[in-house]
Length: 152
Image (cartoon, rainbow, N blue to C red):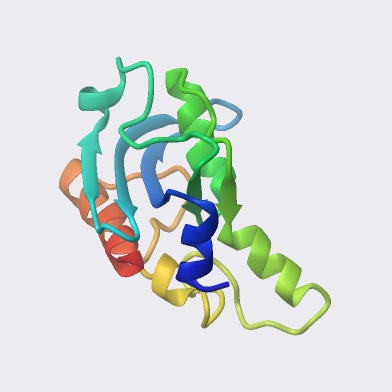
């Protein structure tokens, strides 16, 4: 699917990535969010203390907007943790990759590996070595920035 087709169906397409802390079995505590609207290039970088008391996320989530993430449950759990509504339309690149490669031999797959050549531009960057583990504040922001910048 090309970007042109996406914009026939959606007014905006947002690539969103959160960094967060999470204890086993608990909802995450968001640390920061980086989001980029892919057509306009509008970039949002925000620390949790700037958005945690807001009633909605810093990007739109209505039915005319596509929310794009790699492993969307992680990003959506941050919405739930702060009491925000979930986006109406979600594209999870991890789920799409799994559908494309089901039953096929694949190289090591994960956020670190880039998963699939077609998805690499969107999900490029590295993650902390353990899920839910966040680096110090400047490093966490740089990590989220790199992944979202790659989508722009």
